Image (cartoon, rainbow, N blue to C red; front, side, top):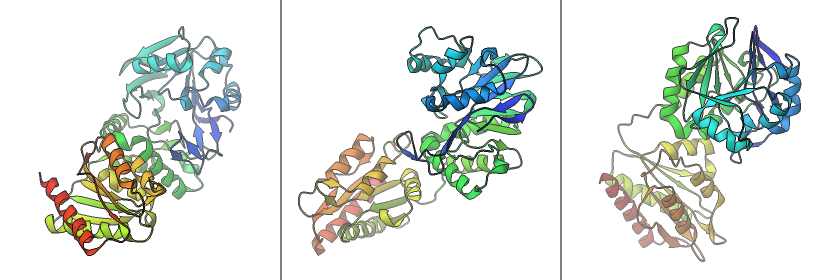
Length: 402
């Protein structure tokens, strides 16, 4: 990707990674990603963030097409994960004059990330400014836990541009960099949701604070660190509204209790439905939903397990383990915001039955409020065992009343 002009004196100089399919081990990136970096050229010159180390060649070519790297005065680091800071050491080899500007937390992290104890760092506070001359002044706005403690926004008042780091971004790669030029808007919107769930879902109260800070700026452009530049009147308002909707606590008149399960031969499913009957008998106003994990879209299941009032998860045991779809769901639980939530594990097994104890142990390790030690039966549940499952559901519901 060549350098792209955003406004007079402001350029996108980042790099594209269209072939990436997994980000940070846990995120699917079916449409690749971009490592966005921005150059502001005035009497003094500032560079905002670097790129993944692997893409340094493309990055330095883009910078050099606008200015001599040795003429850049400042490097602004809004966030310091390696996809943002990975090229810092190489950049400093070519531009040792750079002063790095970041938050106090960022200054601590960068010294460990770069292993450069003499790194020329200036830590800024919320509201601090940097005058680049020529009418361009940067204002730094701290935005902790969006999504690291070191995160901040950088605001260019003269051009109405907010550089928001990961906030409002997406792992989505197209070469023209503007939301108005996205070729596959539906795919982009899917990526916005997946990115939000994986990165900002655990930090919803901070998302709402971040939106308030951003609204006060009335930006015409928002430049995130991944995905297209968002423009007022194009997609900016839409993405901000999505973040607001996804982060605002749900108001429910009645409790919502999903029961997730996998069932090789239908036996764990029978237990799930019996437990649902028991819960509904005890909490008739509650919404109890029985969900076959393999028959539902995973992103929807992830949203349900993280927004419910309580949940149960059922697994058979295969080869002395819980099955992979159940592990995937449990791994997707937001351990920060679900702490103390009532839950339980259950399932049918044939030989040894390790699946339910394993899931129970995992739920406890996430600091959830696990009910009893789970419920199991061997092979096909008998009438008595189904009655026991119904009773287990009743006792689970009674415990919720307390």
